[in-house]
Image (cartoon, rainbow, N blue to C red):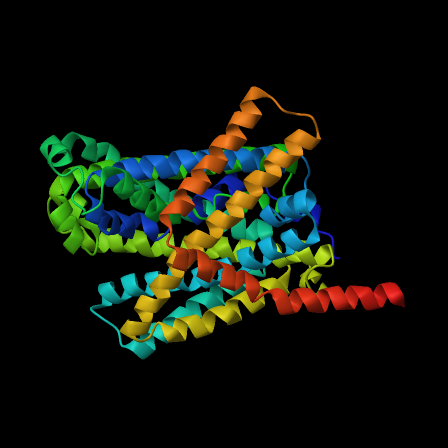
Length: 435
């Protein structure tokens, strides 16, 4: 394994920007319209998802404070439950990341297309490929360079998303908030559960600060702080935005909206705000894609160090970037970009994103169980720690309950697809032991 040069390690603010940047992506611009089908109750869904995400961030903060090693959820699952559980958590999480990345490229090009007055499907595809290829090459430059860039991008997209809602608080029509509480055909409880599950998509990535721990200064202190701080910042952006957008734009108009924040800005400031908001959305998509590419190569890297993934995943550049994980993930994204060229298949691609939410909730559940096992085994059971673990477990279970059996089944199918490599690595290990 190539060690990471000390000058390429990162500190608190670059790591916090990585967590926040991965969370605040295209979802912040699109989810208000998606959740409008439930009415104002969707604000409660945002709050519930935010509280659950903060609980999970505290769990990951506690787990990451124990040691400074690359791996994140995989590492915690393996230490608590052994190689087999650790492997499938790593496999599922890695597949989840490179399945989600194309959505960010597609989102960025979609916004670029709206600025240009429309682009052909072929132009869409090649722009998406160029974006993925360019950011992949950029990520090979090293952790410190990419994280410094991510810090600037995160500031560019988070500050406007906080300023607009803060000003918009003075323009809220409270009658809108009281008259359209639940406009769905579901009961209050079912609508809240469904809205929370949908809002959880915006929090996928809250754990990403734990994955590159081996490349972080004073990781046992920095990683927990960055994880909590990044999640809280994202939660503030989401909740404030949801309240203002829902309070300024009626649920009926939101259902028809392609740019909820632009519509809210027009009602607050007047004039046309489509172009500035579109530019901000492009920055958000590109920033999140850059952040996920930072992470995606380091997931199999940790497993390869422990002999659960092929050894070539541990190969790094001179700056400590595990390049095979990044390159393979980006190559796997290209077929998904091609599939999205047709509208009917694009709907299927969006369906894959729903699977991703279910899959990450399964990963979070295993991580919470690992946390509970660790504090019990190490005799660190306190009222705070056990309450935190049980509360986080209740939240992930409640969220999974909202997912359909079909989604859970498809998520488990993704895990099953990892069996061949698991058997191959076990056979390889057996042969080495016998030699």
